[in-house]
Length: 447
Image (cartoon, rainbow, N blue to C red):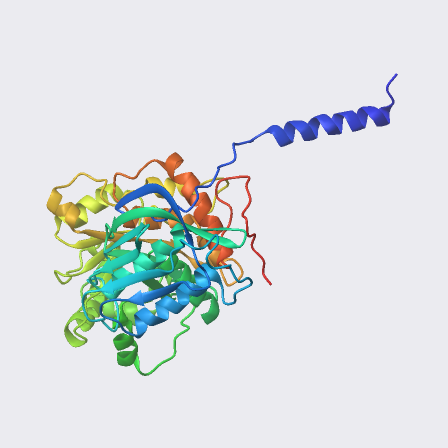
């Protein structure tokens, strides 16, 4: 006879076993020294070379500038760390190790990047050495990042995969939106996020500074702010009138009087069109600035400059992309990349599957797609979770915007993303697991 206590234990064990066996999935085995995002042309040779940590250096063989020399120091620290914990014995295991990466930039360095910057580069790793060639310094920076990802550390030794790479971005605008109107984000966390962007080859930080919850920007020197934004990586957004409801208009007698004067009747859509048209005229004519607008400005019939960039963010984006590009406007997509919407499991795969040029349109229309943005709206995001919410899920968007459009197989991408997630963790980013059970050689620590 089995006692009630034993029956209870038996039932508990069975229940635990059933629960633990539900939703089991195979562990994703990470690649070794494979880059993310995938270069346009990537040819591993199958050879592996040792790197001599103690004597390794970067050497500029063409144009040079502070941007490049600072990058050399930064990537040496990323690859090897700040201090030598061991001294390899020269002439033994490291006798044939690679000791130099030659970096050649053809053109004089620009002070700041822009959407027109040339980010292309060639990278060769062979027995005769390591070379990175780029037209502009911005391409050299992309090449240095890819080079760092080819290196693998095993115990106290470093190795690199022999590789030939030709690379350039598919889209010129690869953006990420952060929102400081709904929760405070510290300068340190924003800087950390920008470092993660560089590792994943994003190039535009769309900074949603103000909205209806708050206006955390108090400056009387807006022209200076506008000038600084020309540096290329920061796109400041002043959302107006914000996500306000029509009730704030209906309750204001001055607005009602104005609408009557303008013969708008009770049509608040006409009022919105009037407001947006005047605002766009101020930006375009008085400030002589171009602008990026959300899709509803076009949907509501406002007249905009021919060089306007339109961001498509709502549902039904396939039809909207066709509509906006048919009107002749440069277009960005963010509809399918709202990363503040989280769900259980490996949801990066749906972000990876979304493509900005998958709509019915002519080749000329599809050329008007200049890229896209992944968005992190701040209702439930602040310093405590921004990095983990973004990364490495945003890396899936990064590869979609950088790599060739033929790269669509998420199952083939998963092992590389697994390695890349651990690569981010090793650099100090709180990048969350995205492929189920697994581990990283260097686990994340807050200290």
